[in-house]
Amino acid sequence: MTDLEIAHSVKPRSIIDIGHQLEIHAEELIPYGTNKAKVSLGLLDRLKGGRGGRYVLVTAITPTPLGEGKTTTSIGLAMGLTRLGHRTAVTLRQPSLGPVFGIKGGGTGGGHAQVIPMEDINLHLTGDAHAVAASHNLLSAFLDNHLFHGNSLSVDPARIMWPRALGVSDRALREITLGEETGKRRGQFVITEASEVMATLALAANHRDLRDRLGRILVGLKKSGAPLVAHDLGCIGSMAALLRDALLPNLVQTLEGTPAFVHTGPFGNIAHGNCSVLADAIALRCADFVVTEAGFGSDLGAEKFFNIKCRVSGFKPSVAVMVATLRALKLQGGGGVAKGGGPLPPSLTGPNQEALSKGFANLEQHIANVRAHGIPVVVAVNAFKDDPRAELDWIQDRSLEVGAADAAVSTHWADGGRGAEQLAAAVVRASDQRTNFAYLYELSWPIRKKIETIATKMYGAGGVKFEPEAERQMEMAETLGFGRLPVCMAKTPLSLSHDPALKGRPTGFTVPIKELRILAGAGFVTAVCSGIRLMPGLPKKPAGERIDLDPVSGEIVGLL
Image 1 (cartoon, rainbow, N blue to C red):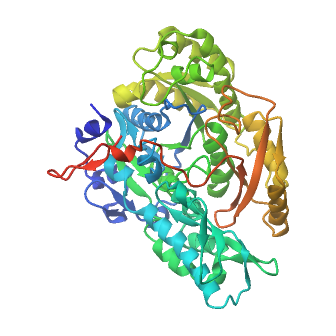
Image 2: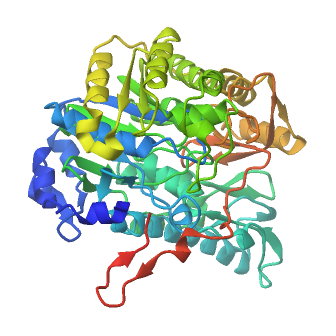
Image 3: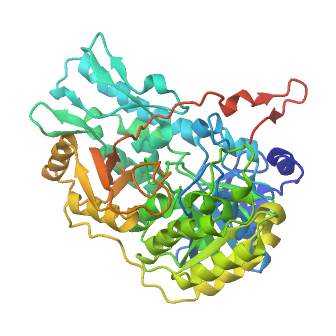
């Protein structure tokens, strides 16, 4: 059965019943049909000083074309914890239309570890991403309108930093020429998930905080060198109005009826890679365990979870789950070449202790990355049915030797929550341990030192090289008063380094930083490594070619 067929084989429970599991009242839900709903923020006031659930982060080793199953593990773990009798919720990012119609496909899990309604979540859900793009582009329109009507603020057109946003991948819009009427200048589009508005929405605490953050967005500079912020252009109220409903978390469910919040979608390689603070805040007040996923490996989404998201929310994680597969570790160890969806060589699917031993170094670095933040690690070996038992046991034993608090084999893709019960039990045990959560760097440090610390401690780099433009932008950021912001690194997810060709656990390399972007509304600065683009392109055979609408039933088909 395909993922879509499995999803359709389950009759969803009423969203009112799903809310009831978390003691969310019917009047606190804004239903979108019968199986999804927005959750009122008034719930936070009613449950002030609520349960204070244990916060479980799911992260992973360095991604490979085979996929490590981070989302399926998050969902499976939540279902496993539920089966053990714990009131549990899972919080996930909303999938992006770029990957859905591009290479990766959907982002709702797979097999018997999915959130549903699968097709709704993968496409529009409740329209949040469209609201983000509309709000973002409204600011773009107001800026160009201001230039057209005389530029009374003395905006310097050559130093405008605000792009436009689009919800699908389109490489032709990476660089554009704007405006006959306002004077030609270069511009660009970023994908919606890279928009500062998306990052801001994900980190906002309430409608007032959202509005204030939007007002602080740095649009560009005036001719005097002073900052031009979005508030200066008079459209913050309209931007916030477009985002009114988008700020409310979306409640859905897993295949087994475990509550799931799917809200906001910043990418893990070019944004902070985590779902909304509000989704977590509501879940933590309603559940004993909250399982949340951070994008890509621990060097990206998890590092940003710890040093950006947790700083904003004030929440402290209890344990982190590190997802790995034998196949991915063998790829990291040079055991073969694989493309997603294609046949795999026996060197990856069969016994290959040499490649596994070499590739384990990648997992070891990721375990160290989490432990550097004072959080216990549970290694989740996401197993396939033909994985050699001896190799599964070896991974568990070696993980304990290098510092993991526990390790478990999980078969959630094939067996749903039942297949994740051992992992769930390991997470419960690890969450009883004493934690010493700490940030990787101090906000008072210079931007340069923060970047160098992330690169050397999280990636294993020997150093960092700043291109002249990045040097200038760093100096400008600190001069304008943004030096105390945390850093969001934008780099390839395909390696611990900046170079996707460097597998395993590379060391001694130099990370090249080509530019620094100030995202004052979101509340961080983004250091962009060479080779990173904020607008993806479609592959030669996009996944969108498979997606269709059945002309008879009206059902969506072809989603993966």
